[in-house]
Image 1 (cartoon, rainbow, N blue to C red):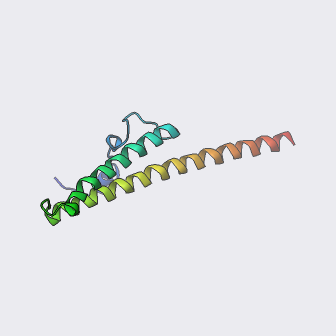
Image 2: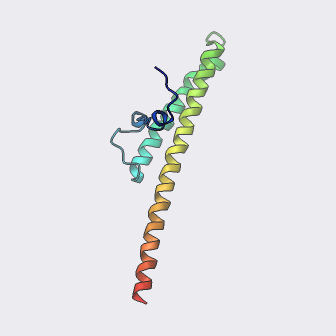
Image 3: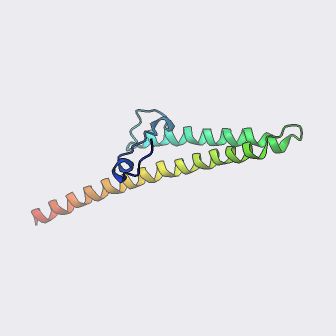
Length: 111
């Protein structure tokens, strides 16, 4: 059943944790980010290695649609890596700003 209710669309929440290194990963911790990026990089590299056989061996050739979707899978994996790194950087910047604000506030009260 489809709906044109904007509220229904607004409440849609998709869980993408299965794309991470570990579904319990806390991406505010750098070692979880490193593990997740490593896993995602391995997936993208594996996809591209599988695809490379289409060009290295004249006897092995997938159809254009398969090649297209395989390339898109690698591209989307790379975009996901970018999203994870950017989310970590944004979180790190927010934490740094909070610490700086607290220190500035403390310094003003001490003056």
